[in-house]
Length: 151
Image (cartoon, rainbow, N blue to C red; front, side, top):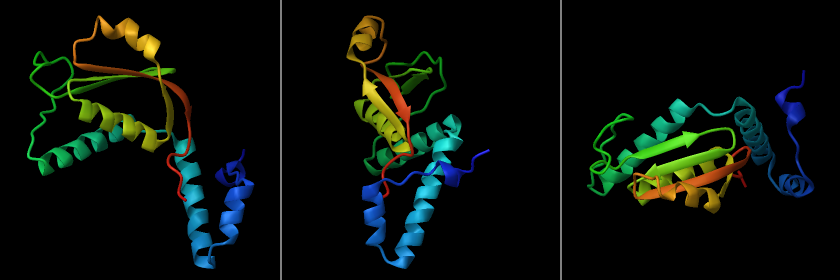
């Protein structure tokens, strides 16, 4: 069985960058690479992920003195509440909301977490007539990586 260290791969440009660092920074860089690789193989806990998205949106909206109410799935007040619906399968992520700001925030969180996404406009067109909210975005999942670069 391979360890996380055996899965780590450093390309030539990263190695050249590593050589320019001080010894303390080199150790820190090694820990960063290790934690990124650990996150890659640990996957994502969606409950914690969406709770962090919710908390970030609440903090941003409180700063702007706007109010977003979070309602459980299946509520009847879809048009009155700024809500984000996310559907995930093996190949696609569908995000629907009345708030473009909240929708973008969820997409950015997926990218920050390590999802490599591509917007699927053809699939969006097929769902456009059935949507119940103002905005609908469908993304094809290309891959899952370690998240944002630490450089």
